[in-house]
Amino acid sequence: MNIYIILLNLLLFVYFPLRFIYKHFLRSPQKKYKETLKHIVSQIQHHINLDEDLYSENELTNLQKLKTKGETLRNSEKLDLKETDTYISKTTKCLNALPSLRKSFIGENLEMIMVAMAIAFSFRALFLQPFKIPTGSMQPTLFGIHVTETEKEPGLIKKFFRYINFSERYVDMNAKQEGYMYPPHPQEARAEIKNPFFFFPVAKQPIYILDKSIDTKRTNKDAKINVETVFYKVPGTGKNIIQKLRNMYPHESYFKKNQRLLRGYHTLGDHLFVDRLTFNFRDPRRGDVTVFITDGLGPHMAGRYYIKRLVGLPGDTLRITNHKLYVKPDGKKSFILMDGKIHPGFERMYSFKGGYKGYCYAEGQEATYLTDPDDTITLEKDEYFLMGDNNENSRDCRYFGPIPRKNIVGKAFFTFWPFSRRWGIVDKTEPDNFQSLPTRK
Image (cartoon, rainbow, N blue to C red; front, side):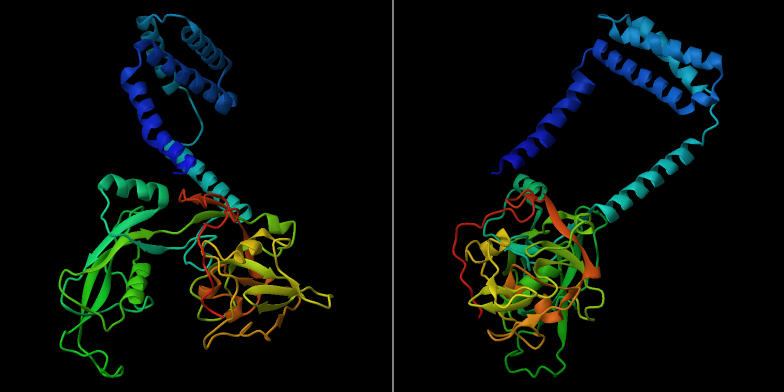
């Protein structure tokens, strides 16, 4: 287990609980009183700093005397508890009676909340923006929301710690009825009910069950078939689980009642901070893991924010040969290999280990650029080309075209959750030691 995970768990579940128990139940009266005195002295100084111009000279003198008395009591080796009680009572009454022209408690706190929110939103807009990886297009550099199967159901404690450390929520789905199971398309799947708890959302998602007498292999797709919609409770929005079932079980699959559909972990995807500041001082570079917005790129984009690796700069000409990416920079006469000398990320792409499979040609009706060995693309001024590291399963610029500079948001900076091997500075993790050969041209 990662040393950072061990330290975090010790901090959260050992140090903080023990500190709370000691502070509230095991400390001696002397130490408790000294803590109270420290708080009161701090309050007095806060009042002086905040409202000094509102108090008379006598009030300020009285506050200074109370502060000095409190410091003297706190610094004494052994407290006189009766004297300390009297001081605390007197000082509390004095502070409550102070004439203050400042706003009411509610108004003052609302102002503080508004200022804090303004600072937070400004920081988000100018410096670091939190971002969650939604899909697997950047695996294994960054992981999106996905499902991992397991045979054995874990215990409650293991479920809890896997969520805290790895953002994994356990799911166990069995067929509620007998028949041919047909998961709807993710765009058709809609949650019926969502759990009100913010950190542990649960949704009910539909699964279509066809009557067991229907031979789906010979059924005309255009024919109207009576289907029964059965709802299953799944973590989050459930779209990824529905897609997982769709990939595992085509609509011809027949299930008996109570037969297992899926047992495993629903992982919420890597959560990271995006550096929005760097690109204000320098232009994006080849190899940067970059977040951009999809405004103006077409009506069929899956979301507003995408994250890919930047591979092409304005003026570049790109091509793919033997699962490797080549570039002819603006003004050059020949192509050069996009390798580790340009950015370490490309070297990992060509390692063919740990899930990296190099680059492949775009396929399908929507494929537009880099569709074969002879296909090249030359970028215009202010255009950038980005592709996912999971190149065989990435909808990127090969399909929707180059990205204008104005659409680039920032550079992926730091993965803060989950505490996996990818925790820390983005794009610094070496591949796992298993072979992953390409499966597409």
